[in-house]
Image (cartoon, rainbow, N blue to C red; front, side, top):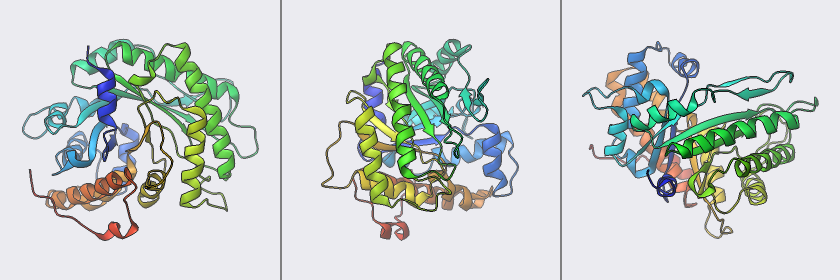
Length: 347
């Protein structure tokens, strides 16, 4: 049985974060539609290989969350992707939930499914090379209709906890992802209120299920204004509200918090993380890191456009974005760095 705490600590190594490359088939199709290429198995494999083999990827990326299909794929030379990442010092992980479905008797709310058969799948994923897992729950803040309900929050918290317990049993570090969506016109104060309630429920459930907090990571949303709120909180306010919420809810035993970007722009996701880690900020008991999907992938995807000739350019764009988020881990990111491309030697 692997040392789960060692894996969790490695995933939040200083200066590094996690690449979320676990888009489901419908989601990756949307990404590919944006650059006008077909979402075939071959194109998906080629795109993921582009990311995983980018020169210098291990400098700023500690782990990669894969989709089921991707964990079973191989690089062009026949090496399984899990082995490709492992050889670069990057830890392979796997998304294990089956997606959010309508919650029965609760209009407008969702519950994440996938617990049935999970124990068997976890064993298979471990054998395929995965060393950590991820499960996402989604919480919607309604526009004046009383959402979310306590039932929705508690049902998702219980599913997250059952998933986490089974992951640890299988020798895999669980990343627990309760996402309060930024969709809506709610204020940052409302987001803070719901995020706090959600995290309290999650950690109560984790305790009941016997989950070892030292052997897991939390992947929450940042506390931000709703996307259509007329008053958008500034970077410093987001950082302060987010840390305040986490200090009220997350036990010190958890090694790290790896934020999702949740629809934020690339620059905002980096700037918010940077503000939380700036020199002189209060010392927190957990590492504050990133587990970004679109906020890391949008630049390389746009540069690639499905063309082999663009692979090197796309890898450079990925390395650049990862480097900026790596700097945000220590609060040393500056907006001027957005235009500072640093060359990386191949290999």
